[in-house]
Length: 256
Image (cartoon, rainbow, N blue to C red):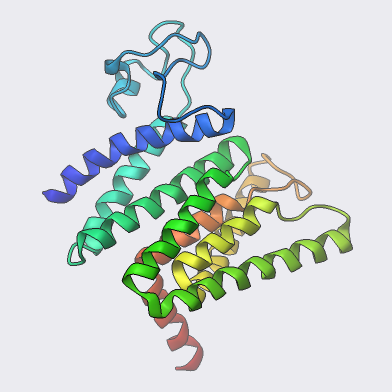
């Protein structure tokens, strides 16, 4: 029952994250100003901002200019609600500070996931504050692991940096954006070396499946680039909830 309440709260947080996604891309403030229609610029009333329900009742269109609204908004809201509920389901025995920390970091991954899909960028305004929060949290709650997590972030950063330069040297094409490189540093500082390796594997796996699907559906061809940030974010989210089990499974299969 409590998870349902958390899910509803997550819907409203997801609505706010949708605003963050759009406004950070436009370089607008995220804490001031009313939400407005991207097309007609009409300020939206409070009843136009009820997560999911407003989208359904308005049949996916602006109340004022009837422009079709993006599915990104309800998808972001529902995704956030589900992930928030999962945090309370999996980590309900932990103290409130830990839970708040997980929710903040998950919110960062949600913004990165959808903003990279929608706009093709990974904002520094999300990555660097999330890294600082991770470092501060570890310093206060688990200082013994701080150095290892920092080393994991730095190591992952240079690993991706080397891959990026090597790919460019061989193909004369950019294979990995700077945002992806900074994102993996954030993942490493948050999850540590075991789960950052798992995240890279999962991100590559999810990205490969998506790339093949897009080619089969003729949405992309073999030469088109597919953003890697969303799949790294997805891999990190899976690692948060199932990292220990997946690593144990891999070790069991590999070493018996």
